[in-house]
Length: 314
Length: 286
Image 1 (tube, rainbow over the protein chains, first blue to last red):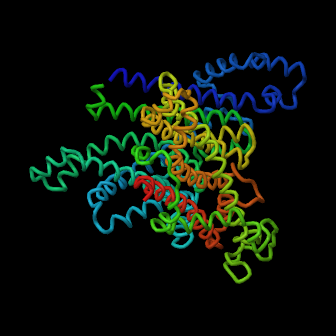
Image 2: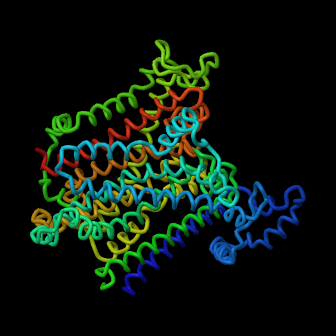
Image 3: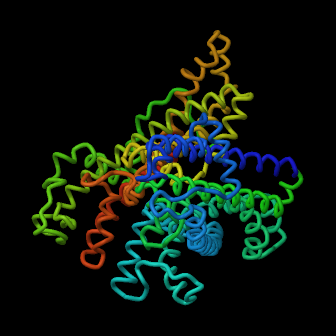
């Protein structure tokens, strides 16, 4: 158990190290001297040289990476080249909408996909099993952002029920917050559900072939009880790992959904920073998203170890 | 997936593959066929220019002149869809080339040689697998410029773990089979065995992965171009067309619907093709 967790923590740290390295070098290699940018029209060659030395920019890259890492750990992420606000403040403001969107969508997707997958596995020999599988393949193939556009056409343009863009913070108006999130969350959930259903269905079918399921059946346990008591828990354990793997998909999906619905989250912040070549912000967003990705994966591994005694025993 | 290698005999020509695919999944063959024809012959088939604007004919619905209507700048949607198919095919090729070459080489060496190399490659693949592609794309596009190639390099990197996983597991299964031992007995070196004995036997599973990752490539090309990180205007692409369509959903929703159906059709075709080829291999090509 300890070894298992230790391995996970080390793996997570390696990922973070690689990603922060990548984010750092993306900025370090970018054209333009940050000292000159900082000084603006007050720049003289002497001043640029002084600031360059002050910022440590005359040092070799590995040392600069060390300095950057230290500053980052202290929470000093630099200043945006465009808005001149501290990157840490920009990230803090953008984090909440993103987390609210991603978490709500994930919960909605899981709550819908797991029962659906179990029912499909249980009824895999019914006539409607094949069309249901085809529907899942279609769901996997349709781009999520197009689903978002179609939801806007239906609910905002035609029915005029929900806003097509914008985000209302819950501190300002709770009902408005919910209304502003219905379409984005639906879009992101529809994006996540098909592959999750497919995974749960395949896993549950293999669990249904286990000996203990045969034993339960032989004892005369009702099919529904077998599904709930034996199949569901065993399927769930594997599904949690799968959700960890899908986290990257969730993050990527959230970026696209934020852009469609003009949600002022991390995705939109990062995207605008890329297109404006605002490197400190790009760095901050990549750092934050990667840290979140690694942290949640670690949390999932921990949960996995806690609910499955077979992992704990290792 | 795991029994693919054992059911694929060492030398097999895919003689009946097309026949099987047409019987098993005619929709896949139809969709991928249309995609290929559009990607290869698009520029000759296009009834109008892909880039010439005509504001007096903007945002029209389907008509006899413009079969699928026009976009906000009055360009013919059908012609631009044909151009988009070509862009999607380029995306497919870049991603499958990067993922296929690097991923297969890594998996082949790791699975075939084992030892420390296998340990390192497996860990790296495990860590990279599932890492948000969008972050890789953001870093690459921030470093260089938004373009189809740069965006697709990010997606290709994300495809490496898929190819590495499959080729590694096939290599491990084959490592100690009789025909490999025979080659070893004849004095062939390990690298040579991997190249000329093991690699040809994993072509089937690799084609399946290429089909699924190719579908992902088309999806990602559309997504990244939609975000402005891929194909740049005025060049057509499924994603950039949908981006243009978003601003006019209230005026001409047909534009967004047509483009979405087209890109979904391409991705669906590739996914169904992957399923069908996988079935074909599972049945030993019968």
